[in-house]
Each structure stands twice: as C-alpha cells, then as structure tokens.
Length: 181
Image 1: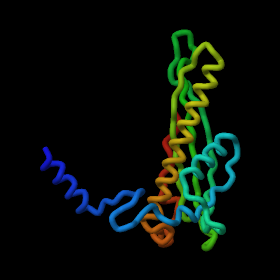
Image 2: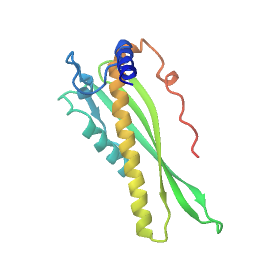
Image 3: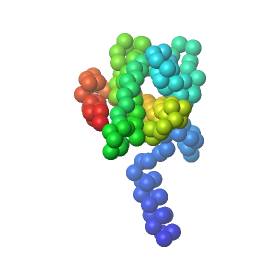
C-alpha cells in the first residue's frame, strides 16, 4: 500500500502539480496580483455580504490597485418539494454572480465569469425558522461564491493573467450558466 502512495506522489510531482496557496519549497505563494485588486461596491445586501467575504479572502489592496473587480448578483428561489396539499416544503435559493475583472492600465476587461451556487432549506410552520433557514442558505451561497471567485482569480493570475489572453474575446471563454431549475 505504501508503494502505491509513493508511486502516486512521484507521478503527482512529475506532472508539474504545485499547490496554489501556502509556502512551497521554491518560495512561491499565491499570485501577488491578488493584492492588486480592488473589489468595487456591489448593490443589495447579498452583494455587500459577497464583497465583504471576497475582501476577507484577498490580501489588502495596494494604494493604487491595477484591477477593478466588478460584480452583480442575481438571486432567485424555487420550491423543490411540494406536499400533497400543494404547499412548498423545501425551497432552493440560487445566487448567480456575474464577475468582470477590469484592467485600469489597458482599459479592458481581462477576465469574465458567471458563477452560480444553490442551497436549500426547509419551509416550516414557524415564520422565524423560515427566515433563519433562508438567511443560512444565503450565507452558504455567499461563502461558496466568494471562495470560488478568489480561487479562480488566483488561478487566472497563476496561468499568466491578462498576458495569457493574447487578444482572445472574453465572451468566447465562458459558457453561459445552466438554466435555473
């Protein structure tokens, strides 16, 4: 069994794998461009929660950041479990973040992505329980979207950032999100 794990680790090292975060033997760490991003204001309460969560995950921005992160958030709910008396007993909350990274130097959008996430909660007879369940689902969605946004930005910069685009049309890079349920 140890031989299998050892072989796996050798193969992993041979393929060029290196962790995105943390300290490495060669001193690399997360791309320094992440400190060059300013997260702009996002309207609505969900947007502000998402902005705060992203800012918590990013290093503090430089005095004059090169990149502006612009995000809009759409939210929708769908009943996914319906009782025999036609009442909804489980709700699905879907949040979609439309993200654009703007380069202030080139005056171009260099990265564009639509991310979505869903979380469910039960509908109970207590209105307070329903509000708490909905808010919990919303916070889980915000946490997921913020983590994925920062990870994808780090990956974008680790792969060369705007230099890797070579004039590629941003709209051709990102397929549209799947339709809402």
